[in-house]
Length: 358
Image 1 (cartoon, one colour):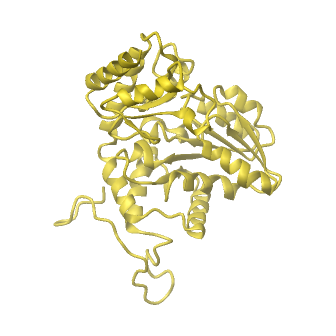
Image 2 (spheres, one colour):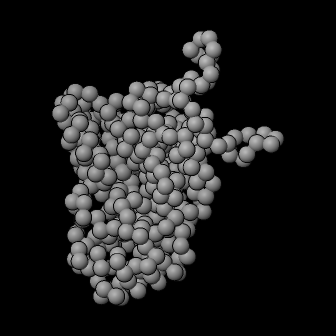
Image 3 (cartoon, helix red, strand yellow):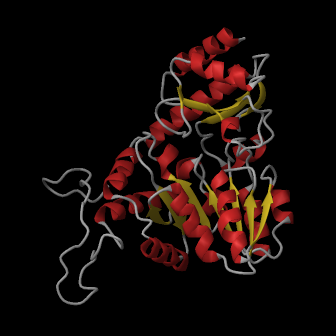
């Protein structure tokens, strides 16, 4: 929050402005034009920066934040190592924008840092997503950072699932920590926003320059909504993490459920690394039912769960990821995002839905 001022609101409202009063020289005021700065962005970026002790630059969406990292840093002859089993937007950018420019793209599975490290030699940028979406593999960020820096590359981490409250990639050696604020950070399923956090002033300036040149700026009202939501981030994240783990433990006892993934489960392949580098598990779990038809019937039978493609909101959401054709998962694989509902109520709803389609 900004410093207290007598008679002022606790959080100033959004500043809706394109031009600002500017008399004299071009640098005579902190704000000159809406594409280059806005007081509402400033308040939000200061708050986000405090989460990771870094400098934050906000963008119009998570995809805008992703491209602000990847496109300016890479040129002809450079190599990008990126996760091939995470957010599909990375693969789309690689296929449609980077490779036609003569940039080599090495897509690797992100289930182990050893695979990432083996692909690092000669790279300019390594992009990992941890936990990955939708399979929730966790990569050892410190090991990935060591491999990246040994190769002379930068490491960027997609921290959307955990947020800076649940995981601090920069503390573990990453150079850039990116997240989609649309998801868990804002948590109300009512805005699009992205952010990149860095501790290098040169990288921060480059991000701002790209944002201004491309116009990938957040709306002031969206920035204000996201800042408003930060006050409950800790409460939301703790409830969602606890409920997600409770659901995963209950699902482990169901015979028809397979491919169950949650980093908090003691027998999950990623548990040891997740326990070492994460403070909160995040809202997601993944599991598969025997067929696409069974999965769709399950989703229809849930009373408290909305079928939707985003995650991290206060309301529980789930979807059959196979419907998009972008993920290497079984057709009955469900990505489930725990909301802030009463844990017992949500677990009971999932169980009754599974019973109905058994």
